[in-house]
Image (cartoon, rainbow, N blue to C red; front, side):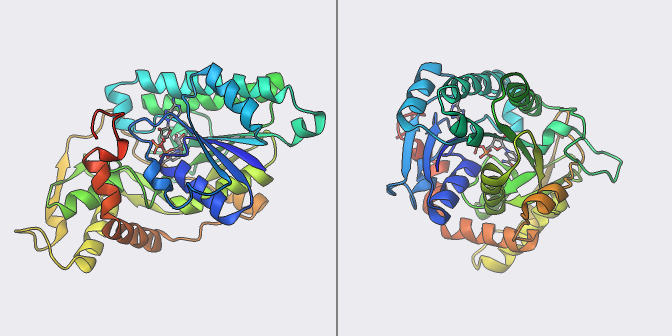
Length: 353
Ligand code: NAD
């Protein structure tokens, strides 16, 4: 099978590409615009493989999408390309509307045009897998409820509203045009190759540098955390075995308050790092509470029982094992994150070389 993965140079997309190349006999066409979040160095283990192809293309560019479909003739699309950082969506929502909504629309139309050229058998077997977030469901503040696949949408941020919009477009392309789509909504991911603007890598790298660890509000916002490699395995199961028209929620059964995540990282660093920054006895001393994010949802929690029951997927990592692996990965992979922090990972495209 040939799978077109959009956003394959990003955090989750690169884990998906590595998973497919290393564990299956499928080929991958990684289609990525390479925004600031795209990092081809995350693919250094697989990028010389004969089943791996890269296309630097914007999902808003219909002409280029048509060319890629015609040249590579994929059997499935896994759509991960997106603007993904909530804080950036608050400061500048335009890119989120453009990529997450207009880009998804453009990709759906290019996929539909290509799909219409396939034989009836190939049409049936084709999949358009849209990768989305649990943030589309809104806030579970003050309840013990879990998000299920039938929870109604109530997004709070420009990011989650743009993802909700793209989810609706994907489902409409199935209902209206018959394009065989499947949607997954997943909780917060963490693990290797995570861009250092996100909570967990930000805390690890700030701590190592002796910088403050900024925690929004009182730090009591609850998120469910899933190790990225568990997510990649789940996504591959869905694209190969999922039912057309279905939605699968994916989560780790790991509800944690942000402050507890930060304290866990601090105690792992206390254990694993022999030389602390000057004046720091314990990393927790660096925690600094900062003004809360506007519209900040208080609690997300996922019921992932459907994918467990129907597709036999379960996370392999607990939060404790996954966060230890993650901290160790950052300690052992300074060249990767140093090149992200100084901008050199992006070559000349971000104006730094
Ligand atoms: P990311 O920001 O790390 O990567 C996004 C990738 O998309 C980058 O490689 C970027 O270059 C590419 N991209 C952005 N705009 C593009 C465009 N216009 N055309 C082509 N490529 C473009 O994101 P991530 O954390 O890996 O998330 C991947 C997907 O998973 C997103 O759709 C996100 O909404 C979803 N998701 C993320 C999480 C999470 O915790 N990170 C949880 C659930 C769902």
